[in-house]
Length: 116
Image 1 (cartoon, helix red, strand yellow):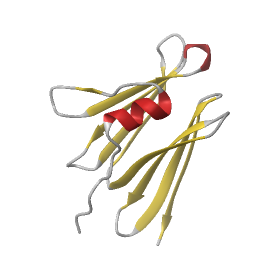
Image 2 (cartoon, rainbow, N blue to C red):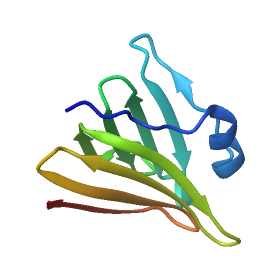
Image 3 (cartoon, rainbow, N blue to C red):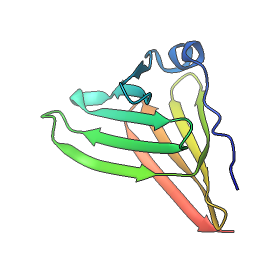
Image 4 (cartoon, rainbow, N blue to C red):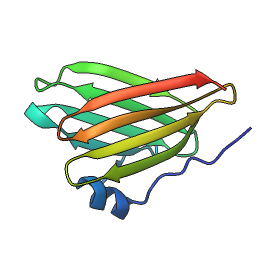
């Protein structure tokens, strides 16, 4: 069963985390978030395929995490005075879950995918 992948528009992304998304030649939307000590997270998302890839690079540019998952249903942002978060919801039909990424004050990734 196909479900829509809901992604905020570019202005909402910029207002929440202070970064504008880019596009590549395949049509993927790419968001790069710089964290503390030169670490960065790179998020290519492919809207029609409902695909998300997250690459965590350390300060030397060495890849620390390369995560790819399909069946994304929602990409959203939350923030308060001291923290900013990115949430990505997934629904494969058999499993549902959420990946939570804290952007500030430091980068962290928490992922849960459970049987329904």
